Length: 237
Image (cartoon, rainbow, N blue to C red; front, side, top):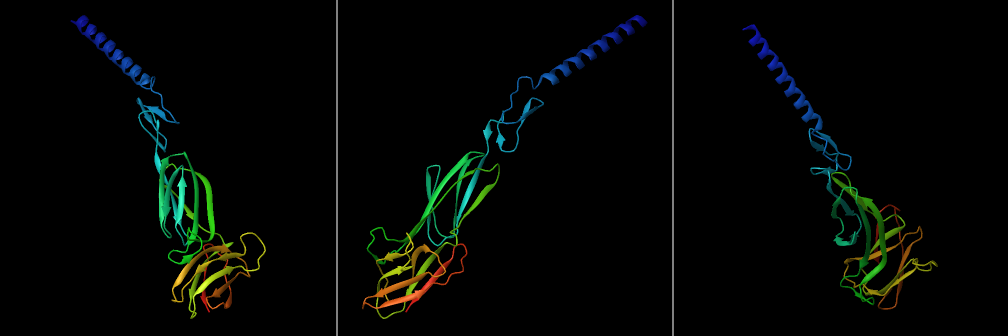
């Protein structure tokens, strides 16, 4: 009887030892055939992915966004990686992309005379201002980028309170450099409405000179704070 008990005790120990060895072997080899990409690590047969990646092998980059905010006075046309969007003044637009991929952006804005009579068929007034930059899509959340116009430019608004229409005007008259003196063949009616007249170079001695329909010339100095996104409203006379 003692021999039978001893036999079963030995068998039990051997079976338990075998199960432990098999269990240990399975546990140690559970990551043997698992390949984790992009810096992921295997644990218990599964990939643990770093922030910015997902999928069974961490093969998928996370999606995120870059948001551009228009802090100017006019709509901005933005092109990111070949996709174009228009951002009205004071609003934002987002472009989606995969984490760490590049967003190549170009953008432009300009004044537009709208319904005013203008010799330029496009209706553009003032200078066209441009941006260009390259950013990487963030790991998570959204990268926010403000689009500002620096203090070397100002946005001009004009209000005609004169009895006669304004038939044209100069900005920075008698300035010699390129894009400094600008002539605008734009008719501004004498209706006291404030009209947007576009972007111009900003100087401490910037000025506006208008000609009325009865050939009078009126000159006005421009006073600026020299800050980002600055504007000036000129009232005539």
